Length: 246
Image (cartoon, rainbow, N blue to C red; front, side, top):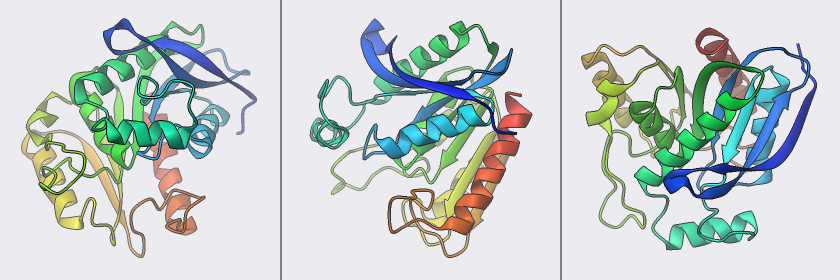
């Protein structure tokens, strides 16, 4: 069933109680629903990411995407803001968690909220989705090809990040991971390390790796797009959300 929806730009309070921009979409024909915090990819808070927010609303979930680069270049285009964010060393982990918490609080304040929230992230957002799930009470976590969950960045990587496997014991909900067999960030071996870490602490997870797909296979506006993998992946996402947030 496809739901009617509305979408708008809103202001939320994120890390440090600072006001940041966010993109909200909600179904208009439901009395109660679960919520999804969408964590955009490194290229930024762009139209493709906003379409994903609307997609969740059309499927019957409220969805909100905080602009993680708002502080770096308020009012700038998504490309300029993303560049400014990278120049500033990327989004600090603590700030990311604070912004996701702000998004969760906003979603739970909506009259249609059933009190359940999941996160989803793409590319750098995949790692950030897992990080948020380790530090916040999320009912579910979706990681779409997030690198540097299992390993630290190399010294030559422009934005330094630490592996977060040491925190996965704190996950409060299950994890859905969607990966490309031809990806190197993360590589299949890094995905296996992640799976083993989840098993070692008894966490529920469901991982799918798609043959013939590399990084960013969900990105319909890029040459990396793999329609068959994306279609199958969206099916897994819909089933996971139905199970975890209703």
